[in-house]
Length: 285
Image (cartoon, rainbow, N blue to C red; front, side):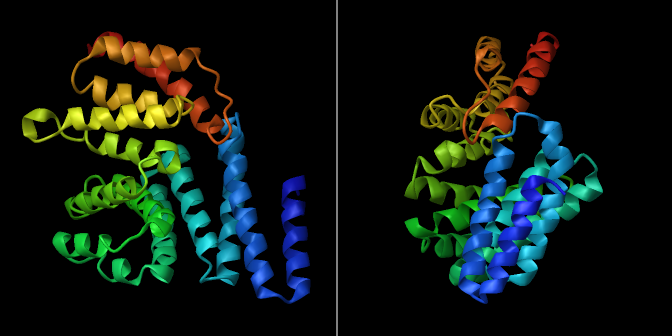
């Protein structure tokens, strides 16, 4: 058993001995957030790939004991969603893990946002009305829900019924940005940038609007999120065949330091992708 696992077991044991459910929920909620932070700050992706499944099982156990805990459900959704999007290559596993991530995020949202919960599967206009009731204090739940919904759809890209939900996901992220443009250090804007480049201009896409989202995401994170530049190059620069911008962004990523609190893992992965994109760009353009 690793040192971290022993610490986890000790915390849970001490919490159970107190007989205080509120303390249990608080301690495990902080612990789940600490697991998220530990993964995000790891500079060896293989360690995360090998070790994260044990933490996923741990989160499942915590949620089983605290099924209505919004912090635990939210952390579970983030862990499952992130692991599925980065490390899971098997389509069947991806379907299962994104399903669990979405389920956890929906359960967390439904604990507090009853109106939005009840209208999730309703027609788009009805969903928009429910979304308009979301206030600033609800951003975290809506963002987590939207991100995991997007991941769920991505794993089902051949299902037109799933793809039909993309406008609701976009609207959810737009609501987050309207309430707080800087939320998640520009993360919501980054997602909107990617979504804005799913279609080329000839068939209704709006890449120039997406460009603004990408630029905002980079500015808000003060350039610390290297994946924002990689996605900008991959989704926008390639879409509009702007090789100068493409190569400039990727070279900036390769020249940057990967170690940044909250971004180290993604920055390490971003550098790997930047090398691949820069090399393949010679044939693309």
